[in-house]
Image (cartoon, rainbow over all chains, first blue to last red; front, side, top):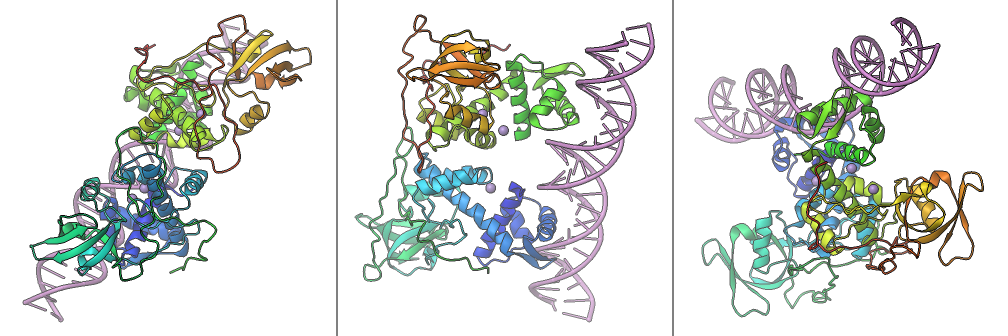
Length: 264
Length: 264
DNA sequence: ATTTATTTTTAGACTAGTCTAAATAACGTT
DNA sequence: AACGTTATTTAGACTAGTCTAAAAATAAAT
Ligand SMILES: [Mn+2]
Ligand SMILES: [Mn+2]
Ligand SMILES: [Mn+2]
Ligand SMILES: [Mn+2]
């Protein structure tokens, strides 16, 4: 059996590879809050287990099998996050930590149940894509708000797990799915000026925050499909206290799954 | 932090004490499927941690603190079982194993959420009582079907975790809450003859099975309060395939909690 | 009251995961 | 090309949990 420790390591490697950062001993160590020496040990162990290719002093890359397992956990993590948010009434800033534990423990039956109940979703509450059962990820391209030129956009994903940060973003109404206009960058030092569609007043956002926001151009001139039709509201378990329901969680039927996963 | 291993040990001790069996090294070892020597080690560790009182060669009893922790896990276990059954559409024979893992991992928030959502229940799908947040258990007395004389009864709880056994009991329609009549015992070797209320044909049940069924006398002459008024049906997540919804899951508001827990 | 059988404890070893501190390799400068 | 800095690996140790096999204690039976 594969331990939850190993699962967390694999997920960390996948994440680094996704960001095109090389998976060095120290970056993994930092991500998992363990000592560098612990990572070195684990690298050798995972190499021996055939889950990654490792050349000492040179870094590591996941094998097909390692990648498969990593995607399995990533899928669980994000499905569980969505479940906690939609069904259990968790705030989007509360889901990550709980999912971090549940992802290793829940049965396949559980995962399939929530997957079906949620309608085979492919976006978690933060806008990140949920791999399907075969490991396929429906990645649509987005750009970092930092790199965006003034224009019309929609928040696509928020890549930061810190509860405080997420709570802040929610207060600023910049949860995934929100359409807005980027007005100016840098006119005020370190700030972006933007306006949420429908509002009268513009608002400001720090560079540091913009770093974690990814947006999609929606410029009412470009490809504007059925994008504003996605309020799929599910009745939730939440006892009291309305929680912000982050929209933008598009849904795809299980039947129309894409064929494969590229093995690198 | 308290490990899930320790939590499982504590739960095993509690269970043995509940059955008035002495918690001997070997019985605990058998229950947890570990070697006797492992239990001895753990006994010393738990003793040192103040969770149980242990005299070598003489067995062990939980301290107040150990009992508190054990009840906490028992509560989680049973609440989660009920949640899986009522909300996630699990069959009552499927809930135990999943709960056995989740009980250690889920946050207090999660537990409180499902507790509130289920209406502060005090019976799990097998008819076992769910301790409240203070550790109090609403134990109403029942008798083992083996020891019962012919008469009118209602199934109260089924104390056996084996999926096959539970599936069998469900096929025989003897889930908690079912009213029936015990007709004869032992007329046919090793079998009980009984009839479920409303049915025309009687049915037989083996001694071995009856051992695990606990019943309450309902004999329409005795204390028959509002007992037949408990269809509280909650809409469940179950995708397809109707699952037997074991009734008899009475509900109590959080407000009217009983005062205390006796410390032995 | 011995002897025999059962239960429990000890002794010693193993695995997974982690750490700190020291050694070594790789890298970026002069 | 030699030097100092940074990253990585090694060495050695620790904890939690487990095991098997042998020793010791308790309980049962002659
Ligand atoms: Mn997350
Ligand atoms: Mn995790
Ligand atoms: Mn159970
Ligand atoms: Mn358990």
